[in-house]
Length: 178
Image 1 (cartoon, rainbow, N blue to C red):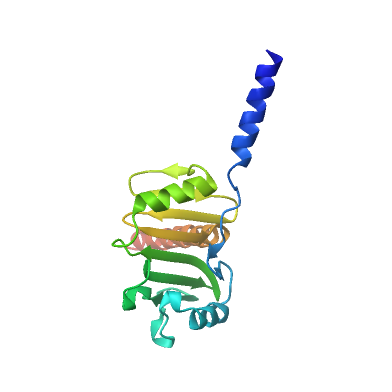
Image 2: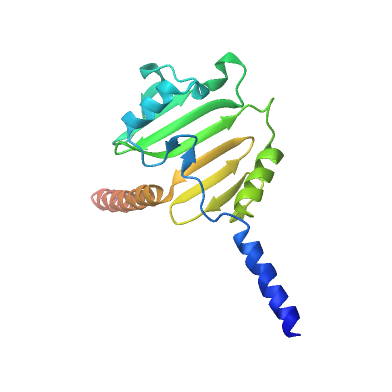
């Protein structure tokens, strides 16, 4: 009986450590938390992303938000279709990689991620999510891989809740004044 329990403990220990609990902090050389200028420089020097310079940059509604949108598949040889790099306060906090569905499939990407990082923390028909204290990595349908800085996303979410509550108070005051 002791041997069986010892074997079971060893099996589960190996199973737990067989997967990397450390999720990637980005794609290729582009990492969450990088500055806008750092990301632009990497995009300039890596043809994988199809970056065309400043014309790929947009300002998003809201304070301190910038988006870089690239089209790597413009030349027809990339596994990537479109890529989005979202910044908040000058730091990269979301990377979205849309993959070319003619050259890549959801099952292959899902299988690879599961093999590398274990089963997802959350799974539904629209997306599979792996998460740790710093990064949320989501494989979304039809075929997009999204890396999110969890700390920044939570901060933005909390600010939105505070703003909504303040707006609700102002609305109530307005209605009371009618």
